[in-house]
Image 1 (cartoon, one colour):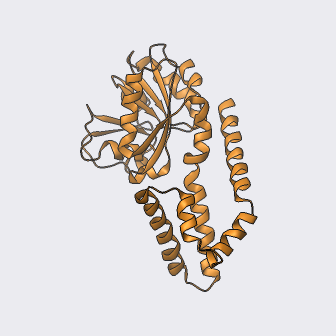
Image 2 (cartoon, one colour):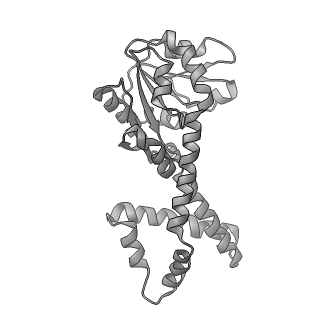
Length: 263
């Protein structure tokens, strides 16, 4: 996710003040970064002070590590932070309170929840302000994430729920595509033909939704002719109680997010 956001910052027309410093644990990870003079790569395996060097003097610091690594990393970099720094979290389930506890009182925290379409500039990112962040700082971070897609600002109490929809959402879509592709293969299509049918249908349907301004329900009704084949198929799906299934799935994701937040 960090690399996806980095690609947005390097996109044409995006003005970044100063170099973008990035830390990686290995040279192999660093080698996957964009080849751009504006990016300074630091490898923690070579230099134990790499994280400190990365944050020194920086206005905005993006924390994109595994949740369990957050407290130790914050304790490590806290002495090197400038007083007006803004820490942006991409660590799922880690609360603003946890961040603020490990940082100087003058340092602001903003939580974010982007999703993987950030890699193609089509993310949906949820943002939540911390108790010490200003409206101007939130606006700056919002503009940062707008380089890779849409941004929705919500109260932190909603951010974990948001993660179960947009954060995990791509996996739900890919699962549906995976199963529909398997159904196509079962009906005699080759895997290549099935992929063309399913991938093209999903891509075209989402583009039609975007351009038409209609709701998914309205477009579904347009496709579902009375007493036709689609109506019969949709009836089977509705009999399976998809509404209940998605409610239970997102509830399970939310429960896990809260477990992560509790440590």
